Amino acid sequence: MAPTFEIRATERELGRWAPGLLDVWIFFNLIVNTILLPLLVATFLLSSRVKRHPTLVNVCLTWIFSGEFSLLLFYANQYKGPEPNKVLCIIQTTLLYGITPMWSVAVLMLFYYMLKAIRGDYAKKEISWPKLVVMLAAPYIAQITFSIAAFCVGSLMIFTRCHKKLTKNAQISWNHPDRVDRAHRYFYCALDHRQLAIAMGAFTSIMCVGIVILEVHLIVIAYRNQRGLRNAGQGKNGVDFQFFLRVLVFGAFIAFGVIVNFVYLIAPTSTAPDIFAAMAGTVVFLVFGTQPDVLRVWCFWRRRPKSTSSIQVNVMIDQEINEGGSTDELPKSQPFVIIEDNNDEHREAPSVFDLTSNMRINAGSLPPSYKSASSPR
Image (cartoon, rainbow, N blue to C red; front, side, top):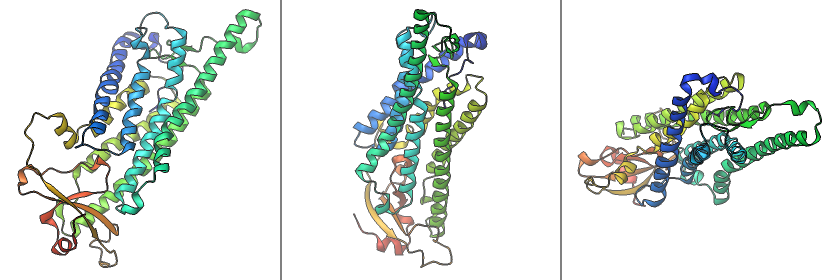
């Protein structure tokens, strides 16, 4: 998932494919990361009908920053031709070195919250403000840490080379070629420092492994909840199938990112990690930007469906009641949202990525015992 920073993907090695690959890389960063994702974040923040948890907004913001940092040479019209301005090159290198650690930590915090939310115990899934602040700040702490490290290493190398010209000393360290320029990676300015690159890749890989572990746990819990609801007579109305589809798509992408990281650490020989990183924002947009409530806000000219009235109920299910296993897969306290809608044509499956622990089910599908236990919030 991390872009590489070795002397590998030079224009000479890419050959005739170089211009086309550069255009693809710029396209994903420009169109998705700097246009579509800001639109999605603005929808989350400004629309009263589309609200998302701050951890999801934070994930989108990290990819927006990624696009902006990646396109610094493009904005300055120095992405082709001669080597760009050295100061601009150092700035871009410094910022890009913290991008993949920032991504990985942000996604880890998102899955951590989702896991707490789907467990169903409302009291336990509540996150205090201090803890939420730490969760939101953690990605940027990782970004700043690796960026400072890259800046210090790169600046020290440049200072050493300048000092060589002044003193004419012949120390071995001064015989290294220029290590901060665009020629190293062709797409962007990069720093050729193996140790720092390995540290960044290792950190990102560890975070991605943690994400995959949380996601597997998340899918297992969701599957058990669905099976328990089906056994309790809820049928297919219990859990939105979009949940499994979206989680699996996003999780497959994260898992592939782990593989890319390990391949990079062993043999960084191609532009595949760079293209993969540029496409990450597209996956985020497709997963979180194609939910029904988001599309309804964007397609405001379309006729809105008949309004529905929702009431919140907490259905307490004691695991000890059904020791035979009909609902033993369910958590002890599982909140539901009952949607009362007389027009089945307009009833839509809910979006699970609104990051609440509420599962929406048809009021008619609840067993009588559950209906009697329901009470408005």
